[in-house]
Picture 1 (cartoon, rainbow, N blue to C red):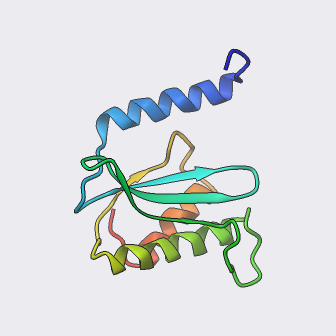
Picture 2: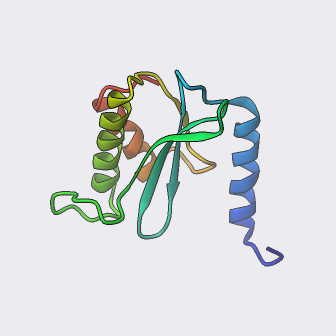
Length: 120
């Protein structure tokens, strides 16, 4: 941890600042996005019960010929997460960009989730 980049430390500061302000509930969970260099991950988290209500990742997912590390893959990820949320009767979420800039794959996940019927 001593050799973390300034970029990563800044992301963690932004992440902690946002986590103090938003909380996910069972009725309105937090949609948290994580992106690695190769894959994108999204989870529906209830901070009240401390549990993950649903999760989806581009790792091993059938994206229909779309690259997992692309914006199109992230959009499909958001749509599939919306389907999982609808199965659990969740229609509203709180979007947590996890300290990342709302751009590219993070914005594509949000756009796909909105197209799938989630409101935030």
